[in-house]
Image (cartoon, rainbow, N blue to C red; front, side, top):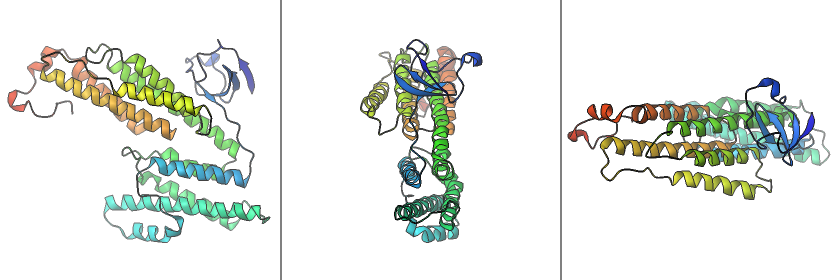
Length: 343
């Protein structure tokens, strides 16, 4: 379905619509929005890219790109060459320490992905030489088995910035292998919409957390800029020429938020110092989380929930509690050097 919307029809190409179902386009609607071709998905207009024609060559390029992206966002040391698959499997099977076994499992998953990509590359080369490659052939089945096993081990792998595995990234190479390319592209728009929703949740939560704060006032405009730039970056491909405008805008919005310093009185109380420390930490953690989500282009539900919980505790500890009540129960001078109760 394709239609054209004038400039006043929406707030922007990635504008979040309201909850009125009768006024919302249907998912999958393609429209011209402010001169850009967009697809509507779960409340967001997302820049639309025409999928490449279905072919083994196109599928190979897609799987290779997804595998590179996978390793780029996950913990170091797991990008094991496919030729070392037997070694990686043997090390995983003989390890008994649970923590070390998790790391060996992550390394095995990396070797499985690389072995599958290597097989698929060879199949595409054979096809280019005129050899008929059957979709249900033995090597294609072996490739799919490796990807599926790697997907199952993905729960052991951590994101480079923390302990979340970003399961969504592990599933993408397998989906690209097992689905038509057009179907895979469609599924990506669903994930991008979910990613945009998390970005909105994070920035809105942080803004609400510091609403009325005398130490960190006027954060909302900076958070709005970060959210808009983050969603814009999430929807575009790195090969899109607009990256040279979008990426700098996101970096600048992130930097401006990270440079914000709390306003403290000349003789701050211990409570005020704790509030400033925790407020600064939440801003940095939240900005970093948005950056991780934007670069991966998938939701990070565990980290998002953790940040929202931290914001709630901060609000209840410092902004929703009268200063006199909090200070009357604060530790005495002997404990002044200890960590804040909030932590």
